[in-house]
Length: 258
Image (cartoon, rainbow, N blue to C red; front, side, top):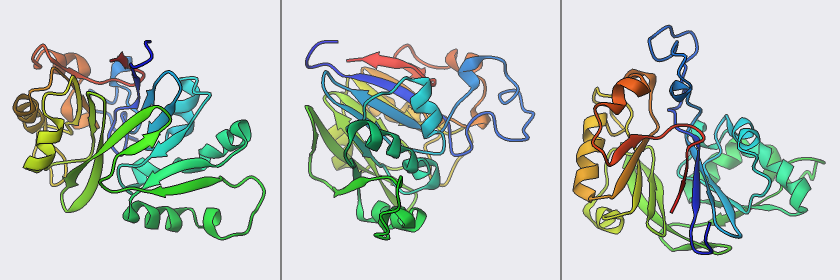
């Protein structure tokens, strides 16, 4: 990996329930293909000197162990839903390794959710072993973490504001069903676009498969990966035959360098 390149690892590519879904006997949930096993959506971005994670959901510990993550410079949150914030407690392992608090980048809404979900972190008890985090607010301004420059992108998840992120020519959008023209312009012509594609049927707060395909074409990305995929979308094998050459389904543990 060159000094200016980044490596992106998909820690999870599933929707809020993951795949397989508990107690489901559908074709996808009973598939033996490892590409049909999806943890909750999250990515790891690494440069030559910096490592950040976008979202830390319920599978965070498992994802970090599976992908042998030994260093963490920051966590960035897209929004406050449980499948994106439920694993924050496990940053305490990095407190022990790095001997410092971990920077956590949040909007005001995410901060409020973290203080509800993790009251023990913020109650000034100094109880031994609780996570040590440094909350850093962001909205529209560029974020600098080590040698990474990260641009927030505003999208909507029905009526909930969600942040996407752009690093170099890589764009990550999850949990969205609307992007305005200004933000479309910011992410057009990306080398790599990651976009949520939940299922075929209409959904109140997520892009469908067809909507994601249409948006990919509109944004003119060189390569697109779909993520935040539900068991309702179908098997990996069946879906790959329906995609154009420049679009793929992301899978857990997939790595790309750009």
